[in-house]
Length: 221
Image (tube, rainbow, N blue to C red; front, side, top):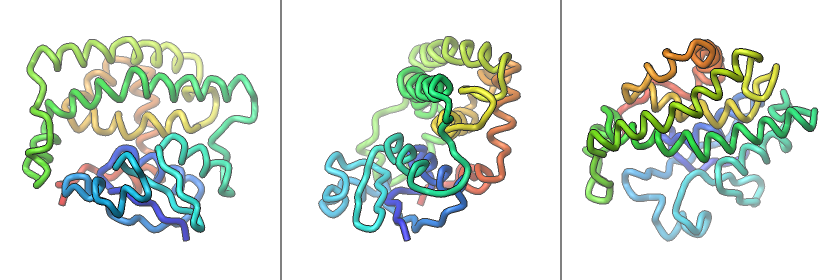
């Protein structure tokens, strides 16, 4: 059985678990708590030299970085393809993954740090290692930074069902966990203000696979 070293509250782990769910493939989730500092342990650094999660282990083969892992799993496992066969659609998928990485996840985490989820996290043993919450100016700037990628996505989704075309793809997989954290951090209005983005979000967040993987955020252990 494959192993995933990560934690159920990690957005990056969620991406990997989502692909596994879409492929209907079981893997063992081995808890590596970031809040308890387990990701920085010597044991975990042997798997991931940067001390981050997740890590995939597949019959002795180790792979880290969530976006690399999900591409690997999509090719490795049977089940519905999450990468378009068409070269142009595949290029669009990669474009939207890059947009998430470059313009979305950073501002979202700034809003997470200013929201109720972060208050729970700051009660953890790792609290002394965490940066302080952002001030109001930083929160305003993060919300403003999301306007362009969300506007571009909204315009795209007015023409097609999903980011890369007619089918759910790895582009949706990479956006899902960050938007869930955004919603949990009082940022749902940024999605709801854009009708096509809101329609798309309702559809992808309601997928049975995501309902299993991206459960309502719980209090971290």
